[in-house]
Image (tube, rainbow, N blue to C red; front, side, top):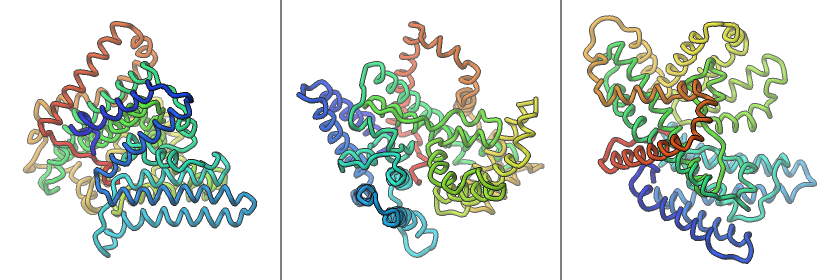
Length: 466
């Protein structure tokens, strides 16, 4: 069930919000009882939400929940034996990664066709973070299976993140503050996220898919550049829009999730880009892979090795195609170059525009590998960017007023305007007139998004495949 679907907007989400509100208004002798009922209500709603995509996938998620819950419980019961704790941890890791390998990589091996459960990479990593934190002693063992199940399956972040670490919501599972102001901020985040997904990302997807569907040799350089730029904008607005909607729904239900994107396309280095892009995944790999390997505390060789491992695993996490692996290694090389010498040059460079050009071009080339079916196809597409002479398709073959307006909105709202305004916007946003206009804009964008959805506009979602 897509957030950007009529079923979700008209039926599921209103039913959940109304149900949550009714429980909030009901009288209970103890607040603990209220939150227990709320959690059960949200758990059942979340299980229904996931089961809508396939009942067999629901059983897989429930199995994952049980494995990680009892893995954490077993770790808690083995506090006196470090050897036993390591065996339990390794067993839980093997089972989790085994599930990922089976569902994501058996197709690549050509053994037999396996249907990929929606969001398996997200909820598996989320559940594993709990086990890791219990092993480290960072969080207490969760005694309630239903609360742990809600943590893993909570529908706003279930199928596309952000990846929520247990310690960030452990207290919120027991008690969370709900208010009109928090609900309004969640509504605002949801409306703008919906607009990013439906109005901008879907429009960019139309032109990107048209260009990428053609034979690469038919493309002129201008069309190839347009396809690359369109996909670069599509994947950002698609994924960040979905994250915004997830964060917004979470707030409307009383949950506070961490940010997942901070205007990554305004970065002045690849290192900065990865501090701003898919923050929850980057943080997960940093905390549970990079730092345990030694991080940057050892020799230069060890640091380089650790970076290569992390980015290769990042590529592998995204899918069973060599293009994802090359994409991960590509970023490992760039990160190594910046760590060895390029980063210092970028810091000293007074012309920061050149830093941005280098970074955004590097990112766009990376997306070519990410989007292509094979490494050879990616190399061919990159070659077309610098093609000279006549071609069957140029940029004018794909441009329209709709595309031009979407491109302008996408470029304007990708972070440049927000970072320039900065704290000034925070002051303006407190003005009553601005608040009213902001609320009206939210409703207009939501209404227009709903109209596009109902009219059957092109509505893909990139990260469903992960």
